[in-house]
Amino acid sequence: MLFDYHFPFNAAIVLELASLLNDGAEHADSINILVGYLQKAGEQGNESAADCARIVMEFGDVVARLKSPSPKSRNGVQGEVHAGSVGYIMNNTEGQETQEEQTATYEELLSWFTEGLT
Image (cartoon, rainbow, N blue to C red; front, side, top):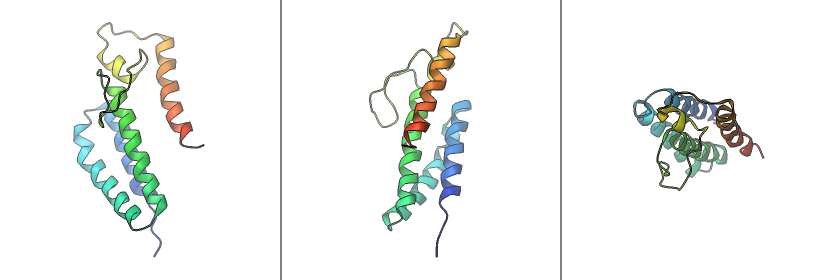
């Protein structure tokens, strides 16, 4: 029987994106369940599901890095919070972001998506 793993993958990505706007803790359990499901299918030989699990986890690290004012992501990997990142904008007490900062945020998110396509 052939299963389509795109639905759990899409659901996990949507929840990760939603965590950019809200407290991500409310979605963490659901994301973990979906990633676990994909990982289990990957362990049983489904390479597509394994890739989907890896992408969701990597995207989760990107989301955590963007939201975090600290230089560490969820997995403890060093990263930077740039002036245009979501983490900076959300924690910026000055309140106003420039066009340059908005562009930097857009480019960071776009680079993550386009890297996965190559």
